[in-house]
Image (cartoon, rainbow, N blue to C red; front, side, top):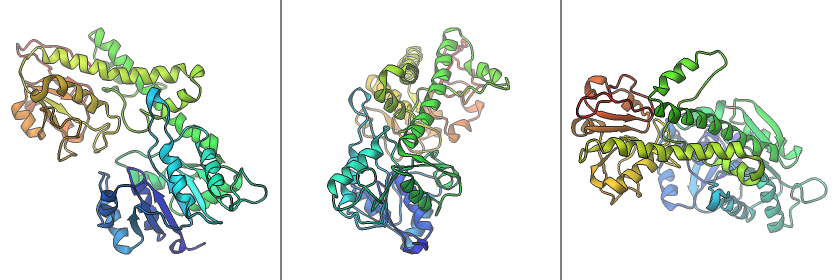
Length: 432
């Protein structure tokens, strides 16, 4: 099919990646069917609204729903292209769980026909795309599945992971380069033709296993570099040195680019994907495993340092600034900030005040804990202790005059001018 208006696309999973992807494809004029197991999500999208926070997504979804190029359902229908964008969490001992991917493939099998293309976008362990092909071959013996049948295959199967940044998803879905790995070269070419409809960035083809490992490699690389920064911050804390100044000075070297430390690492990608590599080859991934342990351990370190600060002012209300895993989004997946606040609320209950501008109510894990959701102005008026866990812009904008007398633990380094004073006005250094 040459005309976008003739193309029918099903996107399975309408989450942080699936819904923006479905909307971007629908904007090209293709007829897009978004599939989700949640009736609430389906009803929300069909009403032209969104259930997640992402810049400009609400306007885009409203527009394509109004034009009739996007609709949502809990039921699959025959289409030309099927994009799988479902979660791939890890389970016990960090073992990857591809159950949602295989369930999506099982659903697709009921309507699959010759000429169709199946693309897996979910971050997956190496070999998952081949497992999808094997499952489709088993469920649809009437079709020639690539890698499982002689001669020309009836369908194409490929892997093409997203590589977008929350807050910039709609831009990066179009502008970022894509790696497209086919079960066969012919599959890769077929998928390439599909992505060329809406991707302006470069599209590079390879095999499915290489594409799967590329995605895991990208996030493991970032995790290792963040682990270095987090470990450095712990060392600096013990030596009473400002880690932010050290990093700022070290980065003046032309070949040094140290990242910023924080209370840990969050998000569905960086906090999860490296474990897929460790699970695949535990004997040869000591560096990747250690990086994960360092970053997860930074949560414990942050809680310990905050607890020590709280002990200096018993009974004082504590404003925890931020729950999201990164700035200016409402995504709490694997968020170290959320984990820190959960543990503080478990011990201190009603002392804890949460400031998170991207939510209307506390997450379920904090409800009933005694913690209360307030805004930043209320926090500045009522809380003598402030814990910076997320570098939202609204937090960065607070001037020194409004926080100079606060007792602060800044895990993000957004207030370098903060005196960080105890109630006795004795200066203390609390490196993040």
